[in-house]
Amino acid sequence: MATRRVPTDTILQTLAEMYPDAKCALNHRDAFELLVATVLSAQCTDARVNIVTARMFPNYNKPEQFAALTADEIGEMIKDCGLWQTKAKNIQALSRLLLERHGGEVPRTMEELIQLPGVGRKTANVVLSNAFGVPAIAVDTHVFRVANRLGLANAGTVEETEQQLMRRIPRDTWSPAHHWLIHHGRQVCEARKPKCSQCPLLPYCRFAQQAEKDAAKAAKADARRLTKSGVSKAGRSRRKESLV
Image (cartoon, rainbow, N blue to C red; front, side, top):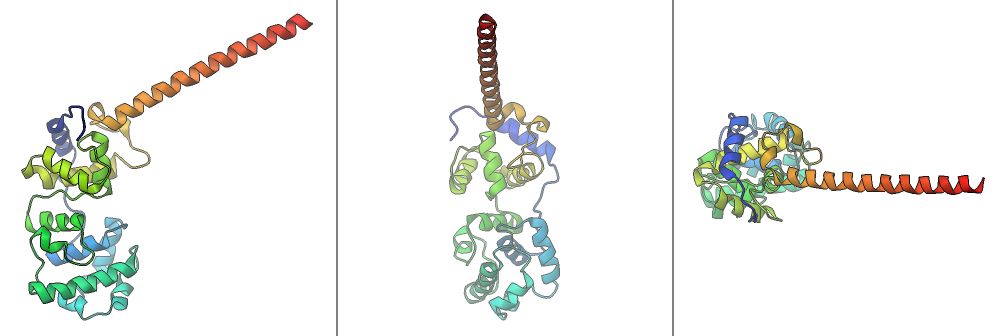
């Protein structure tokens, strides 16, 4: 955990005010559609996934339908997504497993979900939270980045980040907090060029405060170099004058 005191309640309240309508960006009508969409979302934008599923789900949106297809046939429908070959195999395999072990229904526990091919804790948490209303914090790249920048977590892995957020954030706020952090990561706290000057969380942000300190140190270092350079130039100028 972060060693300094972090105003968690203030941060969460600010995020709630910034993103009052935050919700799952993956279009779906039931738990199975959400499961497939979340599997597709790995290393692929939600917008791209929605394009793919809008084309696919009207014809294929049940485990028995995907189970009857070959991986190549599924792959043809999802080529827009990255890693589509692996995803096609996983969608086929998880569909068959749902039929064999769960009567074609998506299970409602973490333990059962992560036994499905292509389903890790993040995907399981997305399904549990959005399809079944189970409090959960799904840590994707946005949640990982924003949580650690703000100091809500101080972790090197998504698993550690999830555990720290679960300890720090009240359980009844896990699911909405997940969406707030995602939206903030997409709209303000971008990976390469965060819009710190526009961020209401700037006063509480560990990342921004460190960036300000680093910028101040760099400015002082530049000033010292310029001063030394000026002194050096002045010395050379005086030596030249003395030789004339």
